Length: 349
Image 1 (tube, rainbow, N blue to C red):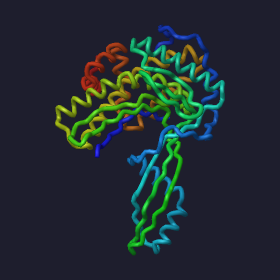
Image 2: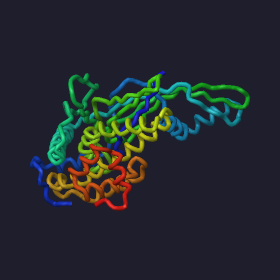
Image 3: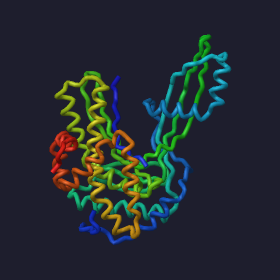
Image 4: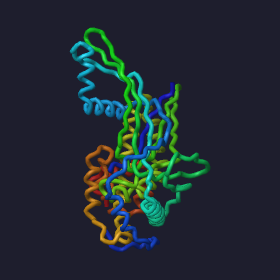
């Protein structure tokens, strides 16, 4: 059986003058929409159920049991009062979404996405990767043609179906079926996958879509999504090439080792993208969001620093600030590992 390693870039949620060519639109009304209470229905399926089971799946089930102590009490009683063990017999999950049904909010956020992407591409001189950008209203449409499709939703969730087996000391077993919905807090997602073949070869594949959530507790987190995801999409080829070179040079043949390389270089990608966004986006927001609260930027950064995937973020911001946008991008494109060395260097000038 082929094995797959999925590594995804998931977003958890200067100068006062903007010299690039940007729209004169005032998007300050978006802040009020983003600060409204989240909507959690109706739910629409985004993908089919998939049998892949990972650490997130076990966390979902553990959280489910912790939130339903009466269920565990009943299971323990049925097993004769003993301590028990449990295992997952079957687990399936899929993405679902809450569509944005407020027309003004949907239109305003979609227009903002187009404007901020145009600005980011102008400032970085990178190509436009998108086939289309659209607010997802009902079911996910078929995607045809070249480029990436960006789907905008109000909320992104993961639904799961599971069968778990509980066993006690008396060799009695109980099997239960569960289903649940988890609001995962992913404001943006662009997924790559490494398929490991039977003969040890591996190959990369990537989704031809990205999903953006227009809601977040911190307005800056939601506004950052299209800028950050665009840069991830444009730099992902160079990250994958670096992973491939590392695997070949080190003769990697274990999945755990491959995963460590992918996670490390994903963190490096997060560093340059985070540095570029930190340099560019506040300038755009000052123009298009009169009275924007700059403290939201720092709050978002501090929240990210709690997670391992952002362990190089602070240094990435410093490198982009010191070396400049063009130099940082060119260095990463030439060799992400050289960029990593710069992140770890004592001097970056």
